Length: 246
Image (cartoon, rainbow, N blue to C red):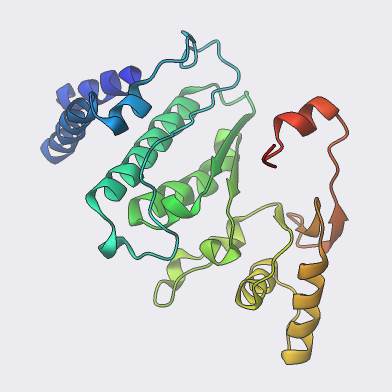
């Protein structure tokens, strides 16, 4: 986090930036300094003993933001508490800084950017714009954006914002087990599966509910769709990426 503060300080001192941009950087810098000694601040400013996580030599950088008051997915932004607005702003800040770091990397280097709980960024206009930019510039930057979401409707445009449809820009799309009928309908729309009547929807609901670990529908960049089973062969990787409580 101290590295992030240095980046913000550089932004507010950059005379080439518009004044309102420098003011925003100054505002966030002041907020972060204010939270440094609080309960949230201890989660943000904690050190893990690694000195080179933001170094150019690092091949893998994991930004784990813990202890923040993340809003509920079903809560509209207008109803967020101040602590929740702060949490979303921090996630956006971390994503923006990481994206700039990847932009500065050589084009010849294959870059992967994974965003877990991507619905949080999709819930605010700035976050949607940032993810859209990554998708649009991904090919020219040799960048692969990986978004993980719980519900497929997050990747679909909201009513009245059809210009925000990113489904056509997605390459590989995997959807696993879903138990909600409404979310199954969203998944069918996202994948582009044929849906003509309630009989078709009932079939998809039964199918999605039957999927087990690693099984689901996969759509490739050519638009081909089929059922797949994905298994992690390496036991060490299986253990490292398991989210099952012990």
